[in-house]
Image (cartoon, rainbow, N blue to C red; front, top):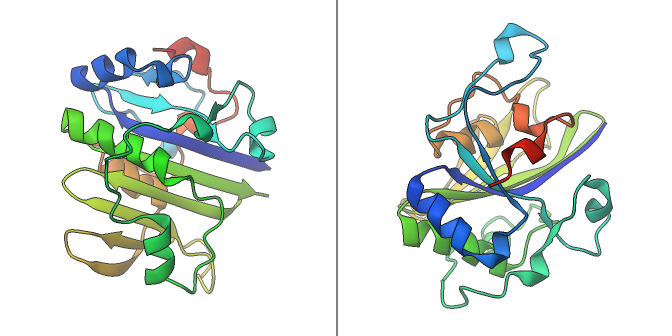
Length: 218
């Protein structure tokens, strides 16, 4: 199985909804998922809800020349269009991260302009905003990372080398504490936790191929 996700995720607060509706960049790529989630759960343990305000997704965001652009069922939001918020500083830029953890190969990172838009949305609304990306192949994670913008900047990436089977391990950098920490945790689960969304497992209904995104268009 091949699976990609590349998106901005945030909470469906009224200020977020208003800001997104005003921004032409997000037109045709904004979705508001609310409870209840209508999904045929394959086992009761994975069933979950989301915050009462729902979650907002801007998706799919990617390089138009990359094969990921052809994988998605609907039109992509090219990251070449993210040329706004140029005065928003990204402390944990991809370049800074490459300097802090040089042993990691950091492929597939978005341009800083995408991160600036996500952070600027958080600054304007005072609501946490994340940029999340994953690439799974054959059921295994090849790449998974997230930036979370809120009271601080936070970068989270899955550790794939020398990790025991059935263990989710991640590395996290937080500007508040200026430290690199390693946790036995799942990148998506931890990212959504900062958005007031608690998942019982790493399974996430909006990340299934059958999820009906068109029903949630904002």
